[in-house]
Length: 257
Image 1 (cartoon, rainbow, N blue to C red):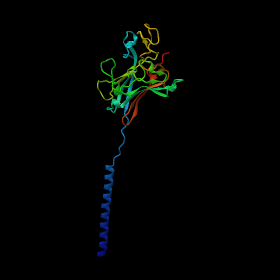
Image 2: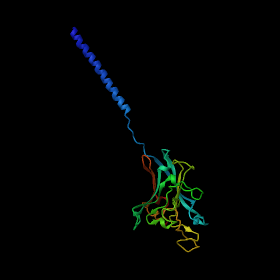
Image 3: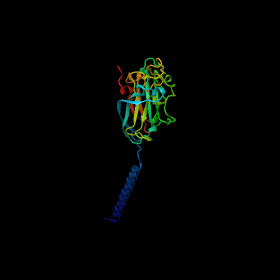
Image 4: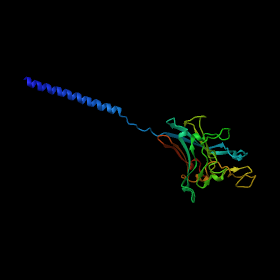
């Protein structure tokens, strides 16, 4: 090989080596970019499972009529019991309880299509009526439910606490997270208004058993007339927000024939 030919061959060899080095550098740079670029995927929505236990009874609190002897000291209840929570750190303050009323199912209702009998966080609903403690400052109060107007029962709408509808009972006092075993107790009397054995009957003669209307407890009777009438909803208001539970109240007690 001539000296000139040898030089051309050497230059080509050096050029190939430089090209390979540059290609390797580019490849390393691309992989470095790929490894440092992360996709921030949102966390999956939380999930809650539950079981329903019907046929129980619980004491009621409220006006002095609740203290009278007779069947009105206890009221039938249905329990919604938390059976599973994922993830396990869902704050009670981020879980909203809603008792929603579909007023369109009530013929001739003069109210807006949807009203809320009770709406508030579970953290604000852990007060046990009947003891010496006070309810939370933001404890929800009874509102309206289509043709059921709480203004005529026990002091007026927006002045009666949620415990007329039901109670939220955490499995452990003072807990801040939703926990397996936590229970919402809903008062049930789908056969009409409960009997009152006191002397303040607002719907009958004084001193005799009559239908109680001054401190009505539980869901309005018309909630048990249709699957779409009323719903109990638990919603997670954190990130990502989602509906945890949506139960037709109709399914919590069958209609009375």
